[in-house]
Image (cartoon, rainbow, N blue to C red; front, side, top):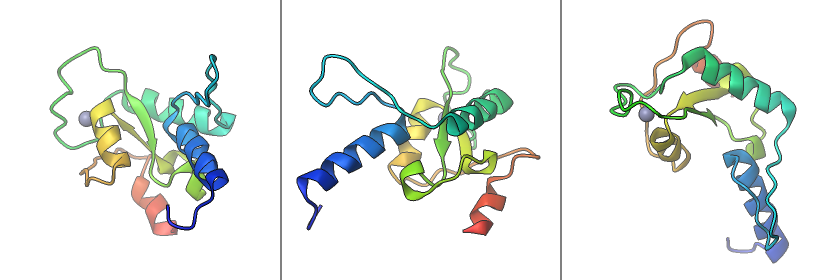
Length: 121
Ligand SMILES: [Zn+2]
């Protein structure tokens, strides 16, 4: 945060909220989530395609009642594209680990291939 103005901090907070899909409170009594429709479409596509966590041997897979989440490999605020190869399907626990930078071994099925996206970087 060194060298960041309060505006920078606020912009980062909003962008992070957009990326995580969490509500932006901003001191208001209502909440708003903003995300480009192309990202929403791709995220739904990947969650529907997999319907389970892409972390290898996810221990939560058999728990039932899990709402799977789409995670961007390259975050939207970092220029991540609305591309199926830039999105993974995780359980909430692995999504948080992934976003926190903790290494998560993933599996995938063609035609989806996140390695193709990483190779473009
Ligand atoms: Zn998982």
